[in-house]
Length: 239
Image 1: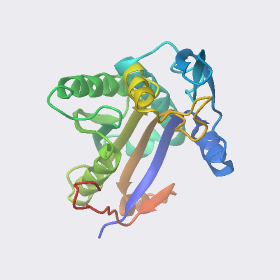
Image 2: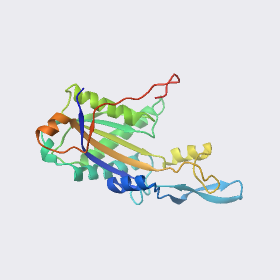
Image 3: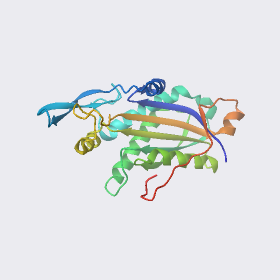
Image 4: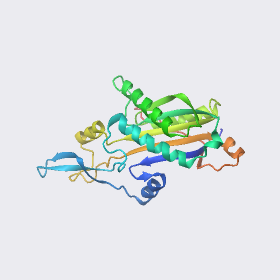
């Protein structure tokens, strides 16, 4: 099969930019803290306490819903600009594949999801180098499998020769009011009385994919190489 090059990466997460996130993840650092904007009633102490979370400090403060995802996309796109050379892909067709993990597909959420992707794509276009010829529409993915499905579709697109480059973006937050509210009601969030709970965070990531042969031809060095992609489907429908 045709090998795929990861030619550039733009990322901003609860752990910082690309290098800071990688270093913090390797060291097992979460940078979590109490969030005063998220109080809850502690049944054991009968007092108000705060959720322990890990927001993208200073970047997404004051934003909720689609605006919060768009803010994460903005910083990921800015980081992508710094990690690539636009001259190397100038004039080449670029197709976008975007996923928002926190917005599940469904009859009621579909319109919200499509609107979110539209805002995010517009935001990315306004930040990314103007010389990039990104196609006007994007393929949309959602839910827990959204990221891997978007990556799979982009790889297939390149292998089929449908585009010369692909942008794959994932934008997700568990610190949105609706998402965090659902997690709190389910009792799975880390709090003062639930030390083993989930520490909610958020991220925006965009990667630039090309066929490895194109990258090798211009003597460029890829960030990484994807030779194959697979995931398992269980009988319950999970993958």
